Image 1 (cartoon, rainbow, N blue to C red):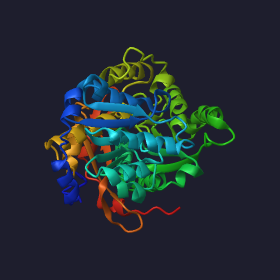
Image 2 (image 1 turned 45 degrees about the horizontal axis):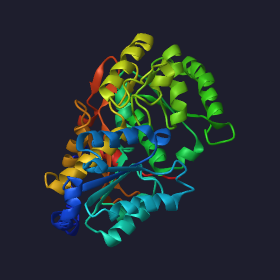
Image 3 (image 1 turned 180 degrees about the vertical axis):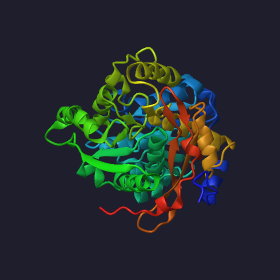
Image 4 (image 1 turned 90 degrees about the horizontal axis):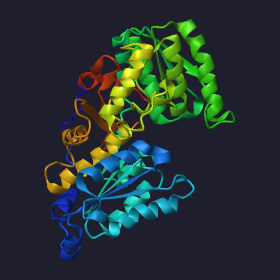
Length: 410
């Protein structure tokens, strides 16, 4: 079955769409004071916690203005220690609905408490759209209160990353992780899909265990392990080996050593030209902050100069940036009637507004226990960009249906 899963998806709740159509608030005083016909609330982490997500919100403000200046976007940040301040996070999100012109609330990333915040908003303001990017809560939990949840496509990418490795000339694929991550449905299932894809595409699959950065060794110990092991792995498996790791902390030392000793890297767990590359290659991106075409160009120049073309990849635009900005754009278009809430094609177009030359694809989440496809949680992915070479059109691949039937067993 063709995984151009720009699917003909079952229509979303007619009641929800009816709310959208009739929810033009008539508070003339508020509209006059604002200047904008409606407001969109965007909630992200801080610069220290998730800078790319925040930069996406800033891009929306750049385009449509901040509410305080008469514009459309109301941006707030949740606490860095959101796990211990969950009620504060919930209250901050819910408070956005007090604005009489608020028509949509977007939370990226959907940290714990987002589902409850959406539930409370819907109780009193059922017309407000509630979108979340990269939800941390169980799919069945977030699906109950969100109009739309967007996650990185761990299923399709289990195949496309291996396919890209083969296209680059890899003969072996090394997957690096640890037990905690492998207990997660998303990460554990992707590993199984990668292993099966290697069998089908003729690559040798290898699983290597590295320390968990949250364990006693900490981030420094986990990174030191990678620095020491990569030369040994290259000697063992050869330079025609593609490496993938599930943890952000492992990415930078992995890239650094692959550049020195050989090997390939397709893309990070949550891909971005900012993920690992600046630190691994000593790239100063201060002047380019938030400008991803310029960021990519500078990263590409450094990587090609130091490690050669065609052996390192990424997404051309940050996943976190794209989701914050793209969901804001999609909400705006749905409210204005130029996009349909139930159309994945319309969502991909909104995301593509911020990712020129890079296409999107994906499919709706399939529940592991029932096999039922969700109507309001979609898994997305972007074309892979190979530094010094250009885009691999991974979004145009036909991902065989068999990979979507693989089940996760913890």
